[in-house]
Length: 305
Image (cartoon, rainbow, N blue to C red; front, top):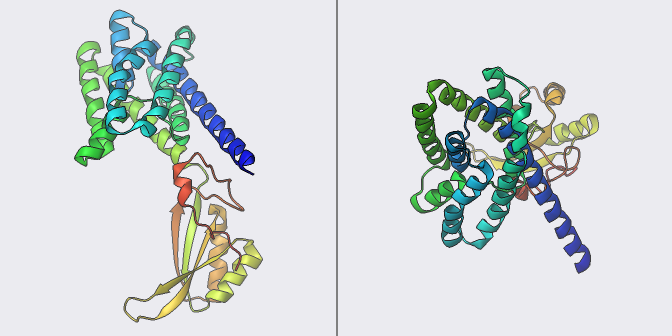
């Protein structure tokens, strides 16, 4: 039993690091295929390395790793080894791939600056998002932001944005306004794609139904839609009346049918339909054990009543 558990943990760890490596490869390839030929930048320590590369030709990957050394040392001292080990691994992999994919510079697929910005943002965001999805990191300003957030209670997004704006000001001064503005567009697209990858594409709707006929509604949903239903205990704040609420997760295309079922049973039911970024478990997707957000998944979200 213990051997099986250890093998399972080892398997998850291997898959996690493989996912991080794939994400680093995609992100570094996007930088060398799209950003470098167009003289664009990215944020963080890699952005600083790219500025030095444009000026002096020093390898970006090697620079990125060197710039991260003092940040990693700070993280080890202030955040602890458990936080830092994975960042060291992610930073090393990403730095290596940045230099290993350097030859991709000669194979830029597009020459149009707008297309370069868009595709660079999409593919780099895909790579970074995959790394973050595996609960990894490529180091850089993320470390500074985490430290500042822990000790000064500042928002990480604001800290990262401020640091990256400084890089953009330097870029505008050295290379002109046009590359700096396209870089800002790249950063926006990159951040949008990263958020999508982290949140997941398995978008569903979470529906909360308040009705005196909750049992009949639940039975109809189970029989006609084959979806698990959960009863939640609630109490009216004004009437102090206790009642059960019906909670169910459905696909976006099933919302119409669900509304018809509820209306046919109780036309006066109170229905709240909420967006759910991702739903995992029976009938939907598998729980990703590398995703820290999956730890709080409802145990009885698909329980048949």
